[in-house]
Length: 176
Image 1 (cartoon, rainbow, N blue to C red):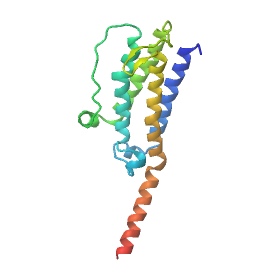
Image 2 (spheres, rainbow, N blue to C red):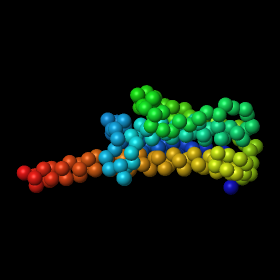
Image 3 (spheres, rainbow, N blue to C red):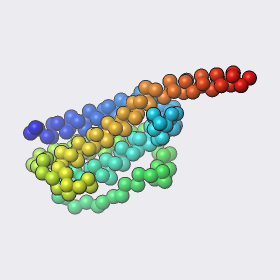
Image 4 (cartoon, helix red, strand yellow):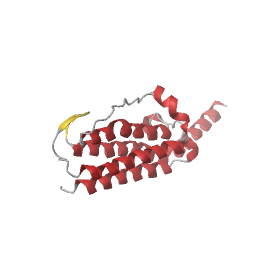
């Protein structure tokens, strides 16, 4: 493969679109709720998934791409924990998704500056000796990973709630 820039532009756009599509399948009143059945739908709210993916890209993926331009930059910690989430979860869902779009667009635009990069040559990264192609691939893999969870939420959240309500009703009826 020699057309790295168009390929990765497409992948970053498609994975962002898929991520937002998955999110759109979840009723908005559930965006900040914890899902039922954490073994299948996970232990984070949809909003936290958006924040997590955005912060991963802002603090790790985007700076890793910039490293290939050999531009001096300030390293930023990635505070990916409950305490950091608690500080930002009241920002509102629209702000969270806008931040995701902004950071993803920055990566897509940065691709244009990487036309002379050797996409196959490994160099030291956060993940060890890896080529730029792996760094960008990891970004859309991570997006698809969280998008899969969001899509499961969109498909099954309300069904699981119905099943749980029916089981509770049956249990109450049996106890009476």
